[in-house]
Image (cartoon, rainbow, N blue to C red; front, side, top):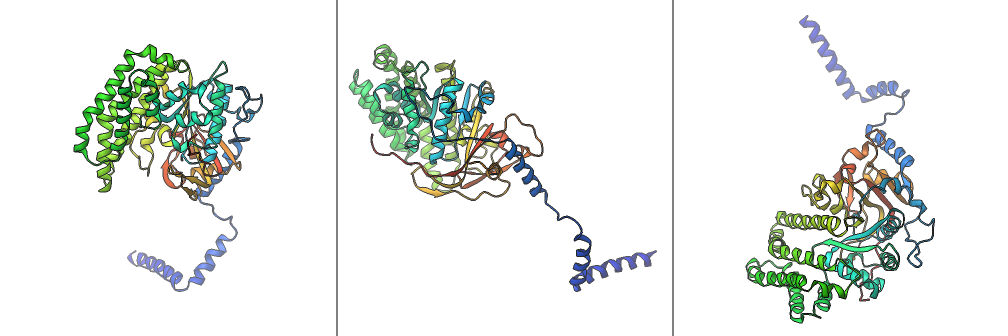
Length: 472
C-alpha cells in the first residue's frame, strides 16, 4: 500500500513537472478541452451587465435642465411634464433635499432651479432653505420687493452659487411674491456671511446706531478669529463678543413690533434674527475655539479638531432646519439646497471620506422628519467643475461598477433613478452594496447608495458656472 501511494505521488509530481518543462504540451491539452466551451464571464461583468440593463429599463430621463420661463409669476402649463414621474415619489413628503457633490457645477444650478419650479408649481412646496446663513436669507426675503433678482441672490446665499445659472431661481422667487403662493427663502447655516452686517446696520441703526455699529464690529472680528491660532488672545476678546450678541438679542425682543413693522414681508424676521443671535453666541462660546484649535492642529497633521468643527456646524444646521420646520413653517413643505455630504442620510457610514464616522446634518435630523423626507443626490459623469474659489478642474474617470458608471448605462444626458421603493434583486443589488463614487467629481469614496439617498440624478456632461462676482 505504501508503494502504491508513493507511486501515485510520483505520478502527480511528474505531471506537474511535465507541464512546467514542456508548456506547449500542457497548453495544447487545455486548449483542446476549452475551445468548445463559451468564454467564461466573471461575476463582476455579469453583475455590471445586470445593473446596466436594469438602469436602462427603469431610469427616468429628464427632457431638459433649463429653468422654465416665468411670466407674471407663473409657468406655462405642460412645460414641466417631463418631471411628472416625481409626483408619486414626492407628493406625501414634507422635506425634499436637493444635494450636489460639488458647489461649482452650472448644470446643477440649472436643474435644481427647474426641480424647484416643479415642486412649487405642482406639489405645493412653499419654502426653499439654503445651505447659507439664516440671517442673510431672512434679511434678503424681508426686502424681496425692493431688490433685483441679482441683489436678492447675493443678499441670501453663499458666493459659490452666485452665477448666471442660479439667477432664474431668484427671478422666479421674486415673481412668486405677487402670487397667492409665494416661494419663501430661508437659510439654515450658522456661518458668518456678508453682507449680513450691512443689513443689520441699516435695520437696527434706525433705532440704536451704537448697537448697530457694535454688531458690525463683532461680525468682522469673529470672521477674523476664524483664521487665528491664538487661543489666549481669543479668550480675552470673547466676553465683549458675547455681550454684543446678547445685547442685540435683548434689543430685538424689546423693540420687536417697531422693528418688524419696517419689513412686513417677512413676518418671521424677528424670530429668525433672534435665532441667529443664539447661533452667534454658540459660535463665540464653542465653534470659534474649535476652529482655532483646528488651525493649529491641521498644520501638525492632526485633523480631529477640524472634524469637531464639522460636527458642531452640522449639529447647528440640523437644529436650525428642524426649528424652521417645526416653528416657522410648521404647515409648509420645504425644499433643501445643500451639498450631498450635508444632506445624505447616514454620512457616518460612508467609507474613505474625509468625514467618515462623522454624523452630518441629514443623519442628525429627528426620525419623525426623516420619515417625511426624500433625499436626492446629484452626481456628474464627465467635463469640468469649479472649486469653491471658482477655479476649474477636470472630472475624474469612473471605473466600471462605480455608481456613476452604473447610472451612465441609462444612456440619457440627464438620468434620475429612484431607490427608495425597490427591493434587493440582481438588477438593483448595486443600491444595497458598497459602490465607489467621486465626491467633488474627483475624490473616491465608498457607500451603500440606498443608505445615503432615496434618489440619484446624474448629469452626463458638466461645466463650471458662469460666475457673477461683482456687486449688483
